[in-house]
Image 1 (cartoon, helix red, strand yellow):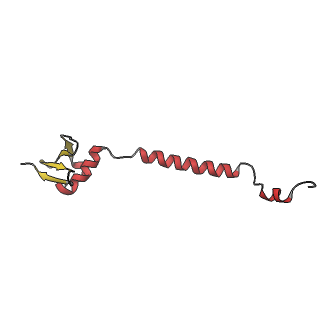
Image 2 (cartoon, rainbow, N blue to C red):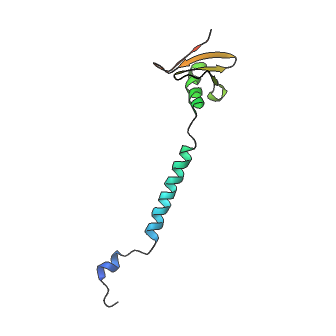
Image 3 (cartoon, rainbow, N blue to C red):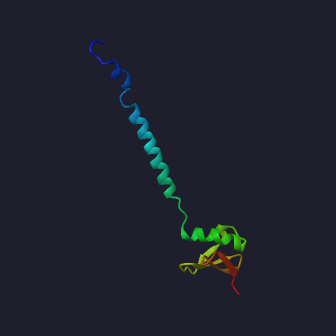
Length: 95
């Protein structure tokens, strides 16, 4: 190895290995990011979850209707509830 620089030889890494590791990390991050975006809850699912503590039903058993910006109607087990998020989250039985 006449003529080669000793420091340069020590700093040289095998070709492709750092790039492959970085590429795998980037692809893993991208895949995790995309799968997370695909599972965002819909507004109905969010409202079902919010109402469940007030109406005593599981979120999947609650039907949501009469959508307004801050209010909606939740129905479960034959009962209807009016829900709001303004000024705070609350649901009350319809009369």
